[in-house]
Image (cartoon, rainbow, N blue to C red):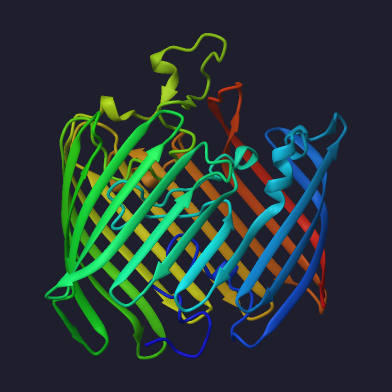
Length: 416
């Protein structure tokens, strides 16, 4: 049962960005919110400093909420071209626009941390991994008591990644889910089928085993099974989920291949290794593996997610690959809110590792980072700091290079 608060109703059951605390602008449904933030400061992208100015607009009145963000950078060599170099940048002003009721959720904006089912194929997918090249997509979820349907497109122009999931409770409490995804530029098609049953519940804690089969028709297939221990309202204070699972993969199959770095590492786009000659690219110039290069073998998954009301959210996932290829994966998210005075948001993705200890080494080409803080210094003045380890496109049909960004700014907030 949901509590009366708007935030707690979305905990642990969200699709895509549905449950993200950073997008929950108010605590109660009856509240309204209008806000204007103006910021100015410095921007370091690569090795060049520029001046930075930005305007943010935020709005909430149930069931609609939205944030818009317009940014301009200028330095000794002129403006920063990717800010406003084509008509699509007008869409990138949309941070998010969403409608959310008890049963319906629709969101427009860059896709963040989207998963279909257990994530056997689409797992923590993001369309903003390359920040300057991010696409504005849409996601939708409709949830009834015995049936639900979810879908997304990574780009409103419908020329990128699309996916859909349908779930139904059929008999004896067994839920069956069918998933389909298609990467349109490469015609990479995948589907999966999963079964889950809540075996027992005690003190609002549920034990639910699952099994999943997934297949890329032109590549390979995989089998996964495991179990969740979860609660959506433990002690009326927190929600959590613990998952342990295993993957058995054929050649040509990687669990969660359509994941955090897929938008920059897929059949049509690749990440270029540091220090490679971009004028003469060979097979060894690229970082990361394609599906046809995967040799299969097994993986072990451990996941943990914890949310405490509207103030704290932590999500951690480690998939350990036991073959000789560097296919292990770390996913980490943290959000902390200290009332109206402080927020912290951290996102780390590490792919291509072999063992857990490697995640403490320097970031490789198959890594991404998002770090942001907001510190309120007075009634309307705040300090905002953002850092990203992201990617920049370098060709018309882009390959990508690692890009580092750091932007400390001072802002003024006006609540309307």
